[in-house]
Figure 1: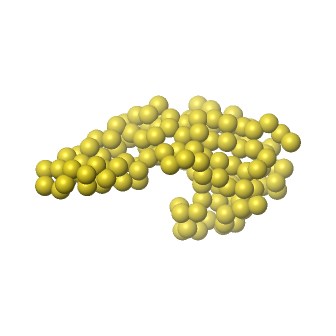
Figure 2 (figure 1 turned 180 degrees about the vertical axis):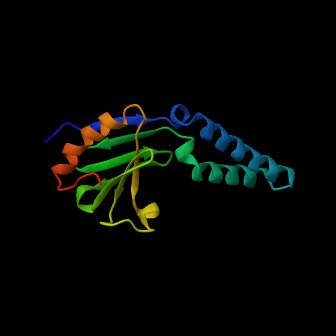
Length: 141
């Protein structure tokens, strides 16, 4: 049994321009919908749906690697992958991609889990995650 590894990722610190632009676009969409006469409740719902689709650029995240697997907490709660479900861990821009597929596939964007890592801590966190992976027969590709 090993100690869990946890970290947080704040998109407003890592990519402030992208986060601000995303918020502005979401507000512009809501304003456009409101100006066209869409009912207020529908405007709120559509604006929330828009913000939800852009949540990785707006909402801070928590990540955890432990004996059960990996987890990511974002705007919609915790999303978990057990070690038995993981076939590949790849280094990608912004963090680690944990996938149920052995080779890259177009379904990675739907089934894989991104563990975002702060830029300055990325090398250290990647080194800390590696022993957890090796205990389960995995390595970062």
